[in-house]
Length: 605
Image (cartoon, rainbow, N blue to C red; front, top):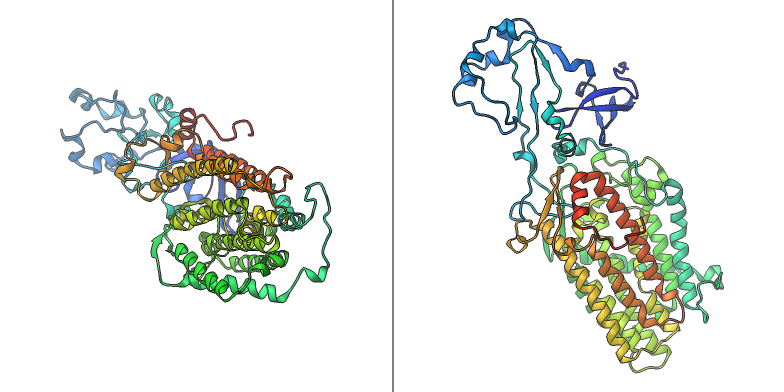
């Protein structure tokens, strides 16, 4: 085993990947297996570097050979001294061309002169949306056109690689505007997850049990005559009544029916955002067609008098079946991720801890052939299943209460949530730029969330109304409808604007919007919806969630669990986004915050 050259905590100069620039770094640790040093830059960035990309501080003052023939400036010939030589844009304005008398100075007069090269990268300038467009999440810029202008006047015996006084004035901006490596280089520098969410390893362990327990508790409470949340614990059903093989078979039939619809060669094929290795995966956009086919299948079932009351009567058993399936799927995903390459792992689920990685998802895009498991679970079985469950609750209400028409409250809940699902399927392509697809792996959190949490908890209002009907007057219904439409208008407007920037930043329709360019090549959208408040789509989500719960009345807080949960989720997301954006974009993010000071939750974090 080769001996390491640099010790822990030692201050050295490290090359920034993909460039020829060296920066002062501190050695954090050394990996004996990969022979890579983990180093920390002054701005907090941590990367892994090879030993030949690191230099001691003393090596940045070196002496050249006294032979004049060895000088790079001599080998470049007379062309470098021709009259066409003009001041480079990277050189400070005060460096003027030397006069002929200065050029004729004897060589020995320069022997001990210290000459400092100009190492000023081109500053990213602000552009309108005809050139660069984006927002705080993601917009790629091709860096093949960006060059670092280096002007080394090697006319002396000693070269001192140290910033000039003029450059020191730009030190803060200089740190932020490093030229970042290309996506392929980033892929090769894939590092372990260090910033853990949800309370880290211990929090992830408890979440694995808390999430299923929350679902079962709320479903049991909805069937009680007195569904007060503090009425704990609810009467537990017999253990043998919690599982039925037939129910599990029906769930599997539903899952694989949606998988069949997903594989149908209908709908366009689009590319997702670039992965760390530069590859763009292909996705077939046919979720809306799957919804139409599901509607036709349901119509056929109702025509042949197949009652959906069975779904209501075995609702808890269906939730348990979906939970068992999500656990099996999560175990399979974790085991297969052990054979995945580093470039295939998710940034947020590669901590090295089994429990945390099992919960968060270790592999970013698990696929069986062309079948993308995460993309499929995100919209198909759970989201479409949510609509089917709502319809089953509507028909069950009519059956149980002997009504010829569903109640106005049930109609409002079904209509609002149907609009939300249809909107998601119609704008299916927009999901390819969300954090779930681009950042989070498919583990227990997403598998359980997509297959259990969404269909069985998001339908909580409809399930509640079956056992606890509530009459809503027409004026009240009109006010609730207005609130939902307002929330939807904000939600759809903000998300559409964001997705339009991500997909086609040169769209002339977006030319009036302003952006703040960053050193990473991504831009922060600072006008339109995103110039009014940070994360305006979250505000739309909250208003819609409230409108879904209001038809249930105010007798119990149980139907408002989704509102409370959603506010907590959005607080977590907004705090995470603020923290990550501040670390990633630096000065550009501070400028954005100065321009857009308003937040949805201003006093929470």
